[in-house]
Image 1 (spheres, one colour):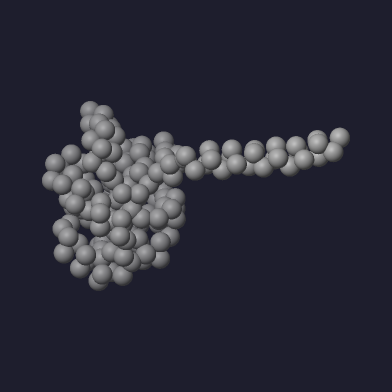
Image 2 (cartoon, helix red, strand yellow):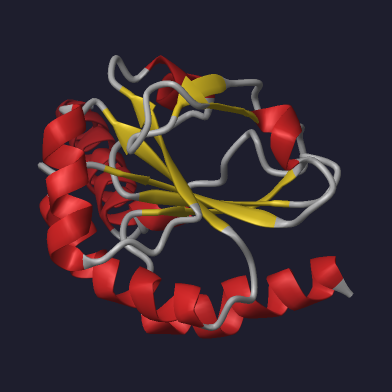
Length: 176
């Protein structure tokens, strides 16, 4: 009977170790978004480069488009940015930026320094629109279809492989 008392805590400990090991193998970039296959949240924001002009989600209906959430203070955004500039040169799909919790001047200077892949960049100074989109952090990238439905989400920086094997084929499919 005394031996069984020691086996119960050991079994509990081994169970906890197993759950921890399983959790460490998960990739946080593969967290499924509850927004996939749902309508993109409504927004109305000013452009980063012109505070007198606004863009709404409904202005983008009827075309497939990409929303890339970024900030000038984001180190991972700087890693991703050359890929976005290269992807934009292909002109497969319009790319809109969502400048997230940033300073307007810092965002403008950042794009002037590193290149501007965006058809327009929206200014989300307080991050409320990003919250509506379920943004965990920057960068994040979404692909939205012609009806305004989110079809793809990448958490973290885009990679050449993700662009080639996921984003480009889906853009072609949605535009086809």
